[in-house]
Length: 108
Image 1 (cartoon, rainbow, N blue to C red):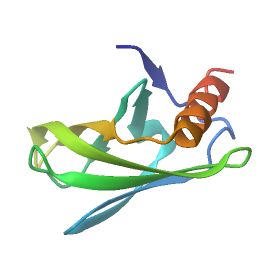
Image 2: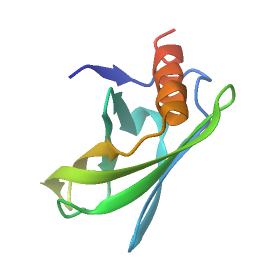
Image 3: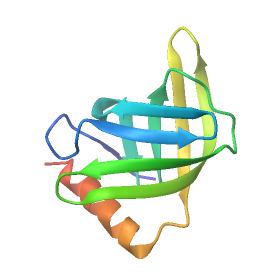
Image 4: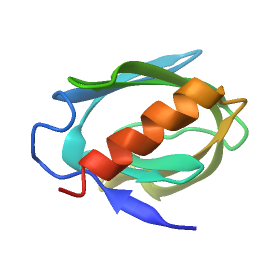
């Protein structure tokens, strides 16, 4: 699995939105890693494995990409925060293409 760290450049706007049934987070760019088939992020709140979530990624060039996925791991504690791993499910070809472009732009 390959990972791409999003730089602090203007490749993505200021925040990511993560929504689950009981949570709504706005995350900074440096708190997120985009993988080929998922995403990892730091969270102040824990998520149970198999929690279904929707993430909205925003880019000035690509616009918004809504990604549905499932939490596959959550480690950490309330003092240091939680490292959440999520795999995307049912991405459309358009969403896959836009996500790949976002990841490629962040490497510049």
